[in-house]
Image (tube, rainbow, N blue to C red; front, side, top):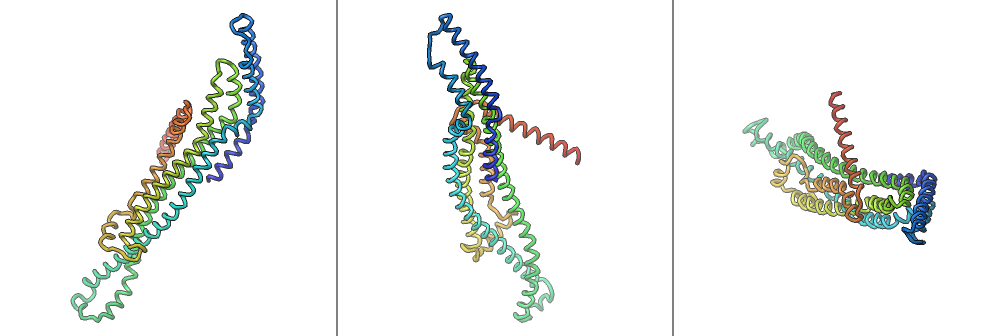
Length: 341
């Protein structure tokens, strides 16, 4: 998915020249207006002849002409930040993946231990309450063992269904938490692609408008917003790196607790502690699930964090408007689905 988003970004950015011709024509008109204003000011004596202010429109026109190269130059520092934070995230994610496999094996060992102990418990109950009553004490141990060998697999299968449901609920909860985290990441990067693409495609108009004194700050505002939006990916990877550190701590914490339940290798189960743990309803301590949800929440703070680094107005408000629009669409969809139901 991240490879797809990266390719999508490059594909959209390649259409930067859609409005270059229109922007050049607009810049030419604004240059004529600008020179007319300056000429009139010098003619009436309000201003003296100054060369540098007259060169500014030519510099802005050159930016429009070489717009593709200019965009790459402006985006280069943010690309460096993205590459560095991505490497940090990838290195930490490898550690997290290893801990996830270790934690999954211990969780499976806990489930198998619960299945075995529950089967043994029910066998003992049936031995004491059924079949021959008091005469059971006179039966040889070989017969007892034979009956136990027959009944135990059946009871183990029955208990496997019970523990399997707990394991299924646990895996569903973790899958939903990971899914929410991934959706948050994908939404952030998609917003970054859409915003940056709009800025790249329509940016030449901001440069052309900045030729006029009344819109002089439009170009600098565009640069600030473009840099701020391009920082989304770098900040996003940095937050994902910090969330990976939290996930690593949460998994190590749960691994140590699972090892207390079933031993270092999952072969030395503690019956009393397993009984307490089975009463929770799920085979998880919840720490890892919470770290996934915290990571998802933090991903939506990236636009605000970006404005801390490059101060600009409009990006956060645009993101808030998008959030309100998404909430409105969700509410309408829920009403429609409710009416059908």
